[in-house]
Length: 376
Image 1: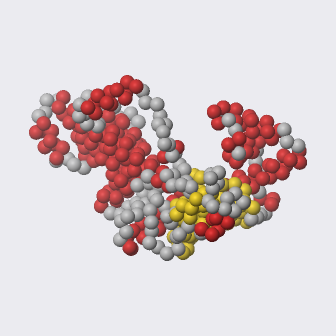
Image 2: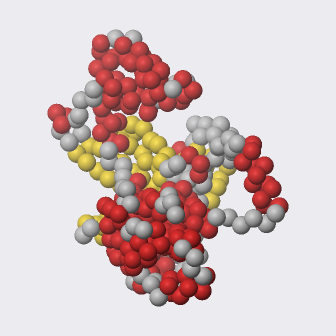
Image 3: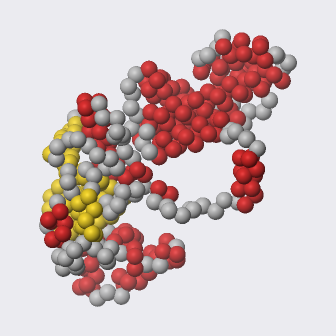
């Protein structure tokens, strides 16, 4: 059996590279990206569409319409993964896995409001209603689809794409482009997010659009805010109340992380912890009767994070930061994150990947919550 997975996306900006194959080195291995210029989306009035060179895109819809709407696309990036396995190596799905795959490939036929348990029960009912021969054939198709899905790796695709973008930006001094995240790509249409198309022995099995988190797609409110909170927000806005600086830094860090801007995410969340730590030290010293001038002088003489977290926190609150409940191992990780990421970003060209930046941001924010929770 020969399986093929094609992952592709439309960039949200133009690039001046010629259409060609570009091999990106990821961990020493070549990751092939194909860059296509001049592609279009041919869109029928029924909503069906096809992308590619204009002649091919229009031809693909010939049985539906002879005059589709033509939408010019920005650069389209593709990656193809191919695997060949023996029939005997195709995984056999459990009942639960088969139900899950059945739902994944035909979710539009299920009542999404019923909940996951009800939908799985419905999937099992449908399979049980099939004849024995039909179920064998259907489960084989589900097994093929389940195996094919394993070939898609959105994070690796984006890692390779952003490596290409970074080098392109520097070499050609193009500041109109930027690294992309799944949330940015989810705004594109009709290629939404990173699309993956799966084939087995030349036959298309299924496809899906990987769009990341839902709010990136939302065009209407996706969360009901308490009316009291909205009223307080409006009142504060009218009175010129400024945002809580620490919390705003952390929200911005999450925003950067959501857009895969990992360097800025680390800097913002590190600043939030530094600010929170400084405020807590000021609070402790002030309660001891120190003047603002004395406090400022002490802080200016101890700008290192470890010095403030240990000596100054002990003087101001009675205990070093690492000695507070739940803080010891967390503190050690944050110190490591600061040395490896924060300093490397501020003073060098360190570029954490998402699997590094995400846990680091979580650790910074968890330690900040411990600092804020210290009673004076």
